[in-house]
Length: 381
Image (spheres, rainbow, N blue to C red):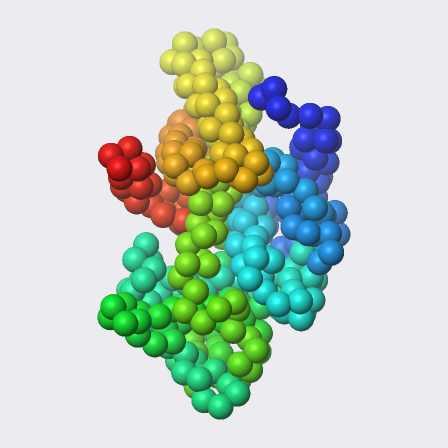
């Protein structure tokens, strides 16, 4: 482990690992098959302080550091990446509310998503606006003391559940003098008239993470539900992106470590040609690569998180860590499946489920191609 980890980090890791192995692992396959949001697990994670760990104690958070939160997500994703993603997506909403919300907004919307009563969803992506966030088309028009929202969102994690709390969305509120769109952030409570859900989206991975389309048709919210300054929405959202990349990298690290752990256990148990398959050098090399990549990814992610905690710029480190961790997780999930042979393609085996989960990580919070653009642009600046 890196030298800057302390006893508190070890205690957090041990607590989350026990929780994941004792309470999540036994139901992971069932949640995968049913594509069901884990209500009891989410509530329990909130009660244990996992969801609110890096947020202010004054609003129900743990007052902890982001490095500790990375460890939480890593350990959860080691067992079930979908559940870890629910915390990750919730944290984006929590960060927006914590950084830009009024005291009343924090009390109404932040506190419940930190203690497990509710789960937050962020509504940015649209059918024609994914990585190109500035191209969103959803509009919000101020009419008297209400904002009227029209448009749609897609690929929205944590949406459509019985405990979905605030959905924080980005919408166009006008045109800037230079012709660019003015984009603002809004808090839309679940159940607001004019706000409806479309299809439940079925995914290659993250199947226990609830994902829906969102539709807004003359959806009226109070003017007070504007989050932060008018026109600051895109800047607010993009300010969370680098943190999100560290957290997605943490999910990838969990998959990478889980793939390694399962492969080692299986290689010791499985026999072929009269001996344990652990004696075959071709398979030994696969786990050697996994171990080296897990160690490197952990160092990169922990370093990026430590830089965030120290208040210094970390966007380059976040992009590099996200790129490396997610691509190595995909590779490790592939090799773990290969090691397991025919059993690896059966969904009852965690290595199969991890393979689908790993692919998603190369797409969200900026694709691998986007990360390479960011890194090279910074190098050439």
